[in-house]
Image 1: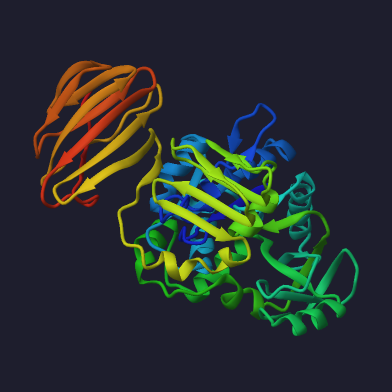
Image 2 (image 1 turned 90 degrees about the vertical axis):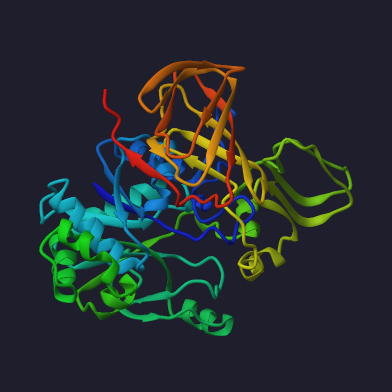
Amino acid sequence: MNIILLSGGSGKRLWPLSNDIRSKQFLKLFKKSDGSYESMLQRVYSAIKRVDSDAIVTIATSKNQVSAINNQLGSEVNISIEPCRKDTFPAIALATAYLHDVKNVDLNEAVVVCPVDPYVDDDYFEALNKLCKQAEKDDANLVLMGIEPTYPSEKYGYIVPVDKKDTSEVSMFKEKPKIEKAMSYIKQGALWNGGVFAYKLKYVLGKAHELIDFKDYYDLFAKYETLNKISFDYAVVEKEQKIQVMRFSGKWKDLGTWNTLTEAMEEHIIGKAMLGSNCSNVHIINETNIPMLAMGLENVVISAGPDGILISDKGESSFIKPYVERIIQPTMFAEKSWGSYKVIDITPESMTIKITLNAGTSMNYHSHQKRNEVWVAILGKGKTIVDGMEQPIKAGDIITIEAGCRHTVIAETELQLIEVQLGKDISADDKQTFRLEK
């Protein structure tokens, strides 16, 4: 089975734990049997491999999420990188071309496309396998998964099938309706459109060549910034005549708000926190090292992390986005392919960051033109390379790096550093990477 997982999101609705780099699919909020936590991305990826160990998974994402994906899934996972955000049709066209031109997947093979962040059980992934096999039959150019509604929702579009068979022709599509309309659609047998579908590679590549002038994946990648923004639904789905829908009646939740996310959490507290005995339906997610106490509250979510603190009635939490858009600050926490960083303090001419490198990893060999840096090692050991000169580093060591110096650090064990950046124009854009000669 070939699967394209769409990994996007602007990181606004689950603030303060999410941001432009760390969207909801990267939040480690779901408890595993060993007591550790995993993210939606890890949960979905491991379930796909559990149902089909030979599945070829490709993640279509923006370039600023690549490091987080590598951090959580490893460096071997296939990634189709969007140079910029252009909506779902260009992203799916690029990922489809990637499968054919880079991974050498045959044009007659089927591929399933689905979001990376649904909250589902293994029967969903078994249904994806069935969806893929249905697309292989050539009975339709597109096979959609229709989710059987559990309530009339304004958040989803609706697919109206011709009949109530497990797999049916599609009669029509309905846009996101008001509640009264949604109720009438459900009475007609309409299904939620969860953005899950399957097709043969040659079909979508053909549609892409109809709408975009390009030769192959590499040419499409080079032209990507010039493409029009358009959704896959508008560009392809709603215009296709030879189309089917397959029913799915298992668990399926879109955990897009704090209210829906807390419904799926197995425990009420993650992190250092306490709830008073008079609290009801309260959830606390605390990523800081500061103790938290909640008393006398009902239907409230409290979330604290490097980017801020949220205290909200659960119902009101779905209206968070316009408020978060007013907050202007650097990303305060991010996962990287080598580990993670957390901003501790910012002044007009300095930024202090805690950096954690995983054992056996290293940063890019890079330089900054507008700032000096000081590294203080606080845990573990490794080595630094500054302008080609190697030296060991361990807890208690201090490394000074002048502006313009090429530098990197390599962790032998888990290595923690306090990095102090000093300069009048500190920016994430002030970085140039180099090849490290061995």
